[in-house]
Image (cartoon, rainbow, N blue to C red):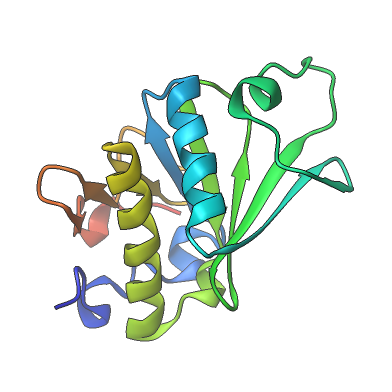
Length: 164
């Protein structure tokens, strides 16, 4: 049974309401959590690519990538959990894992199921919540997220909380 049903969450998957690239994050993380994420990505069977600036490079350890100087080129980890769906992780803070997905790639029940599966795997692997806000939204008001206690993705706000 799916965690969420398209007809109940279609507004949260609407790029016009949420922004095309909603913000997803794992709060209260450490270097060890980042390393667990990197290990998960490399062992999951997902397609991935690490880039520093415009250069594709081998994936470094979390402590190395997070210790880059503040003026270093931006580092990105692009992950395709399923063909046609891209998540982009940014190494901006030790204390939070943040990434984007493109809602235009997540349409209908298949899109909902793909996102729920992806964030459930991350949440289980880290033993932490994975939350989603609208693009540029407040982290204090996530609209959906993985709950590690319930081991499922749930809605966290009603449609009135979606404020583009």
